[in-house]
Length: 532
Image 1 (cartoon, rainbow, N blue to C red):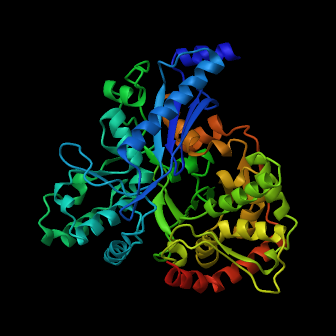
Image 2: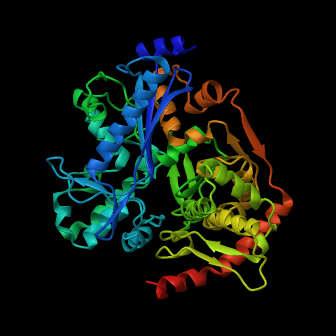
Image 3: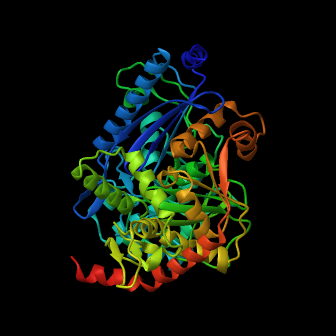
């Protein structure tokens, strides 16, 4: 088997997916059947500098190279092969944000990530102007906020892109983006697959008195859909990825996509009436819609699948970070008591204990807001744990409350689509760190949304696997083969997974917790006001 894979690797019958997550950069090499055969990862953390969440270009480059080097070392260790040829490459990253460059390709201001909420005033103006919800993390909101602020760099902007758009540009020289990510830079017309022409004109009219030397469309990346070739790895790009010089140039690349799009692919959730929930540092639900919603909602973003179908997205800034901090605290206590517990065992122990708790968490309440949360109008991070003197304070209830809290803001947004708009769901797939412990996060998500949740065995591979599939699709699809058919027949056919239907008692318990959660939101807002 290893010899067969070695031959595949040496003949370049592979695809490489690279994803820049919030805390980890991951590379996955897959064979021609999209089966992962090697991987590498690099841990990194965003910096908070001058009031901005950012990563430097050096962070990006060094993280990419280290991640690739570890994947190449994994290839060498497993198969005795030196990685010189790859069939196709794809790059994905955390969505949106703000990266702007001048005519000499120099970065004008530090990268502003999705995590920044400083563009909220601009987002409000644009939402009203377009009659279309523009979140504060979208690229156009960051751009307009910089214009409103009178920032000196704006007059020099020649190109605006996102993190994966930047890396793709470095690898191929092409200033393009996948349609899913493009729809989070500027609204896309799903009928034309282009930026919305009316809104482009409205934006240009809005900034006409600023005397800027560009029109918005001139600085945005070109839009491509899944299956289109988005350029090839240049000599400079090969060195950017692999400074050792072993990797050969000429590799075709797929359109770069955001983690939302790759999550849809990795969970086979691009068909209408399907959806997925990605739960890690942040959490978001993507539901592919049969029709447009009746009106714009600030809690719901309208984006697209990698092939351009309309998606209702609920994106929350906070999910597992506060939960992880509590698990770490219990790990500290374990070490203090003289016992070292491996991280996966510690998570399993605490997550499984939560199942013994009361269905409504015994009256306990938690908020996991390490950073701001626009869904619930909380402007800054203030993680909180709250209980009354009558609440049933046990470890099981404590862990259950914190696990429920990881999905609390998500439920607020999803209830609008599912209960108010009556959106139909045939299938939801969960992926990300919350689902690594068998059954627990999966069953709680099912309770939160009142629908069956499937977790695939490949769920842990996440977006890096999803973008590897999109890369492979470029070079292995048959003529006329849609991405939906490709995923059904060539990726997920025979895939093992577990599906859990919502337990009625868990649903009732989560509804009780959610009502308490919404009622208690003024506590968090007051904490933002009082605790500095």
